[in-house]
View 1 (cartoon, rainbow, N blue to C red):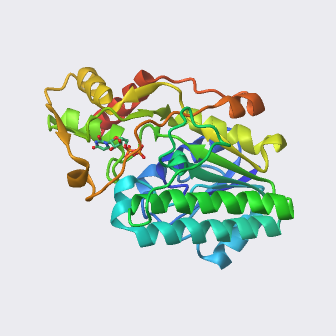
View 2 (cartoon, helix red, strand yellow):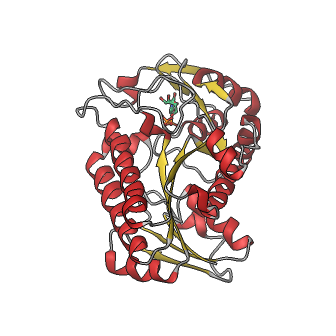
Length: 321
Ligand code: UDP
């Protein structure tokens, strides 16, 4: 199979590229290196069947050619990371909406299978945990930049579902919950690599807010196998799937766990949200997926625990020194 991965030099995209090459697929990637990096794909360059183009997915002429050559498109290119979103909302909205428009329009023209990555952020401030795909989404005011990401991803979802409905395009939407693993950068605010780096450097571990907010962290290897399974299952087309782990942890407990596992002497400190992000920043208190739909459709469940995730991230960060 020939696969096109947008955002292939990103954290998840680079792991997906590797898994597909290992399986014997041809893999082409397009990435503008805005949050991805050549380092992420350095080990793939020169491998049989691998090619890459450094450009934006909004370059329609290029994308037309790339989509044409592919059997399946994984659309991962997006502006991600809470810090990036809060600091650059224009870039976030334009990239996430226009990029997905281009990819879906071209995939529809050629009737290619296309997987669109959305986010658990789409649930917004909904409180009905665990989150089900057919549950309501609840966003904050438009004056809070954070919600621009959720809204842009919600539009992507509407569009993917609309193409399936109106044009019978084989689209699949995945809502990724917090995904973690080697090569993820803490630069854009992701908490696990941030805590691990702080702990290894002996710097304060910065818990934002009261630390009682919780998340479920899944290992990127599990996420990659979910994406592969979904594109291969026609029953998944035209539907939305949560992809995440069900092991819930508060951010304070996470800080403790990272400190213990790295044997760090770092103090754990609390940082108010308005200092960490911006005045009036709104966080989600709990974010827990209901994964029965993906389990029933393709038999997928997360296999790796938070300890597995931390072990891999700590080993990766230690090797960076
Ligand atoms: N967080 C934190 N310290 C950090 C970075 C993040 O306490 O240095 C918190 C953040 O406020 C959120 C959680 O960790 O409650 C997860 O943040 P992340 O940005 O990784 O993902 P999110 O779930 O917010 O998209």
